[in-house]
Length: 356
Image: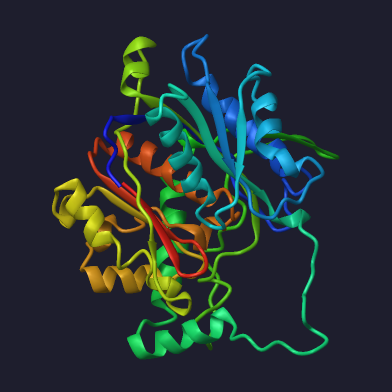
């Protein structure tokens, strides 16, 4: 949807993403969100007020998760009177937090909002419901492997798409500006955690198409963005990334991989630019093949599609990924001097959501 007023991302930061039971597994989702939020707010001029907090979280793994957004706002140093809203739209929660901030601004309830998403999947209880009577649903890897066979997307092309691109981008320092280091204490002393822990660019398997190397893993992390109206940007003399819009779509549940594919032509039309004019397109996927499928169907330029890798490499902390995508795209556009970018996600139940 296009917005009647211009809205801007004026700050964006994230934590490095930790692997399952990895270096940040001991930090709760609200602690991770507080770290990312405090860092994003620190990039603003002193005294700029935040009017509302909208924050995404899916699994609610900590004792303060029932009102997680409230705790994150307080951890970030916001005044006690700032209202907060916790959002669960599955894998689109981070995107939806930005939508909610936009709506708060457009309705006049706020000028500047804190959006984001956080997840600690390592702390989630391990429960398998229905196991006593047998599982009747088809596993994701099964039906997606079936689709892969039909579409002739190879196992080899999938890890190349995300894992190896992440490794190259990391080597060049493309994630440095967006990541806030976390100081971790251990028996060896204090360590600065600032590199994503999940990527495994050397992982390959000889059989199968959906493998550990091309399916996103369980991970922990958070990302935060500050959203502002055009009036607020002028009033507080804020530096900003390009303005943005968002959308959503529903398709058949079993075809959720295609949910962002079928909506992108509308996004491109709304932006009034050719696909080839985009500097970057970031597609959030729990598995690698849908990105390749979308690229194939839309005829996207390989060089601008997930150019620095995606969730296959970095991991997919459910509530955080949408915010992570927008954080990365904002910094990527600034880095390369670009004008347009598209981020998207399939978000469960046949839903899809793009930001551009």
